[in-house]
Image (cartoon, rainbow, N blue to C red; front, top):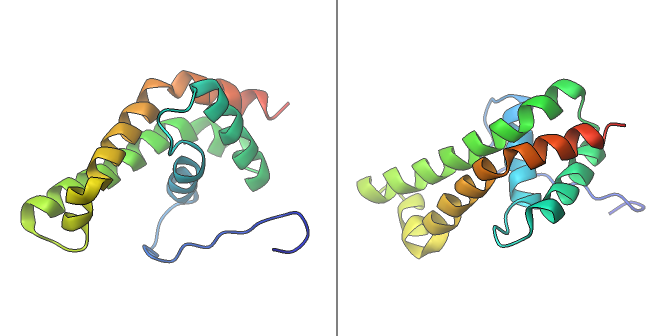
Length: 124
């Protein structure tokens, strides 16, 4: 840490992607991971995270739907890997990660309107 800012670098799935897809995964993981958290509180955390990233209006507009798609993609990877025996994803699915990402997918989808409102308000 330098000063009051934190920087996170996650290399475990490094591959060509888009800024939106990468931001969706980071935002979902850091701010919407607790599906028991009140959606309005999670929305405040999401807005602060995205403000810290200095996301432009285009990223903000597309982020809520992308977070849902990204969470669903992670769940699908875990579920299908469990079915085919691909590791480490198959074991992770069986050890609770599948349940977590299924709930995260539903949470991200269910509250998209709240995420959109929070992201639009935080730009003002």
